[in-house]
Image (cartoon, each protein chain N blue to C red):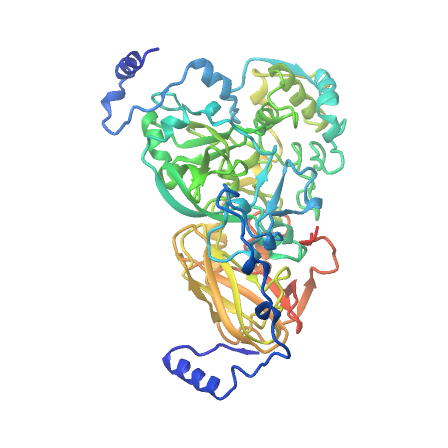
Length: 418
Length: 208
C-alpha cells in the first residue's frame, strides 16, 4: 500500500543522485507562475504600522480556524460545548483563543477586583484571599491537557460526526502558571480527618466537584495564567483549578471556594452526570483519570489529502491521564499491520504528545488508525473492546481507537471496521 | 482593621507557629462563609433549617421551573426530564432522572438552590427549595401525599432507590489488565467497513 521513505546519509546521497537523474524535478510548469512573475501588492505597498494591532490576530486567510459547536447537541448554547479545531493545529500547545469551551451557565465575566478565593471547612483557619494575595505565593509552570469527559461521547453507538474537531476536539493543552494548591491549604492548616476537597466556581452554575485530598496535595494547581497570559474568561478567568490527568469537569473554572471535608459531597456533576452507566444498570462513580487515547488529526474528514499520491505527512495527537505517551502505532490497512509513529516535541506527563508518520501514499484506499501506549503499559483499546465491557450508554470516557477511511481522491470518512 | 492589628490577631491565632506559612490572606468572617457555604451532603450536613410541602412546590415549580422541565418534570423539548424513567437503566435508551438514577436527594437540594432557576440562579428561598424538592419527590412517586412536607428534620429519612447501584471506578481491575497487547504484524486476516458516519448529515461544515 505504501512505503516508508528511507532516511539517513546513504539514502540522502542516493536521493541526490536520483534528483540529478531528473526523477525528483521532472515536473515542469506549463506557463510561468504569476505568484512569481506578477508583482504582488504586498511586494509594492506599505503594510499596517506597529500601532494598528495592540493584540495580534491570525491572518484573514486562516479565518476557517474556528472553535465550532454542534447546534443539535444541546438545547442552549449557554449550557453547551464547542470544539477545538485540532485538524488546523500542529505541535502540542493549543492557542488560547481556540481552547474548547464548556459552560453550564454561560461565561462568568468576572471583575478581578471583586473576586475572592475562600478556604473553609475542616481547616484550622478559614481564610479569604484576594488575587493580590495569591500573586505572592510561590508559583509553578506546567503543560497539561484538559479533556472533557464526554470527548468522543457521541460515538458510542457508532460513527456519527464526520470530523475530528467534533469527535475529538473537547481537548486543549496549554501551559498553566499556578500555585500548588498544597501551599494554599498549608496556610489554612488541615484538621485531622480532612480527606476531601470541594471546589466551587463563581459562575451562575456555581459548579462544584469533590476531589480526594491526596490528589490535591500531589499536583493540583490554582492557575491564573494559560500560555503566559491571563486565563481567558471562557477558561475560568481569573482563577481555575488544574487537576492534571483527570476529567475536565473537575477543573473548576472561576474558582472561588475550596472546602475541606471528610466525605465526598456527591454534587450533581458527580452523581447525575459524569457517572458511567453500565449495561447491567449499575453505574461507575468517581471515574476520574482520562485513559490513554490518540487520534489522527490529518488526514481526517475535515482535512482531506489534496496533493495526490507521493510523499505525505500523517499526524495526530496522543495523551494519557496516567503518564506520558512513549509510543503511538499507525496502521494504514485497518489494523492488519502497524508501524511505529515518530514522536516529536516534548513528552511530559498529562500533556498532549505529537506524532508523525511520514510515508509515500500510493493513491490507494486506506483505513487509518492510531493506537497509543502510555507509560503504564496500557494500550488504547478498540471501541468494540470498550463496548464489550461498558455497553453504549456510559456517555463518558470513550478513548477507543478512531478509524478514518481514505478513498482514492484523498477524502476521509469516519467509519468503523470489523 | 489596621494592618498591625490584623497581624497581631493572626499571631494570637497561632499563625506564626508554623514556619512554612506565609501569613497571606485574612481570616474569613462567619457571615462570609455562610454566604457561600451552601453545599449539602447526603448525610444532611449543610441543610439549613426550613421546610416546604409538595403542594406549594407544585405552584413554585409551575412558575419557575416548568417552562423547561414541564409541569410534572417530564421535560420540555430537550431540557432535562426530572421524573420518570423508572426501570429504564438497562433499556436501549435509558431515562436518567432524580427518581430513576440519582443516588442522593441532597444533590437535588444542593443543585436547585445553587444553580436554578436557569438564568436566575441564587434567587430561591430556603423554604421554596424544600417545597420544590418535595414536589419532585411527589412527581417521582417517592412520596404519595401531596401534602407531604420536607424539612431539614425529615430530609435524611428519604433514600433513593438507585443509590445501591452506584459503585466505585473499577477500571484498574476490569479494564487495565485487558488492554496491554499491541500486535504489530498480521494482526487480522481481513477488514471490512461496518458503519459510515457520512449520510447522517449531522456534522457542521466550516462554511456554516
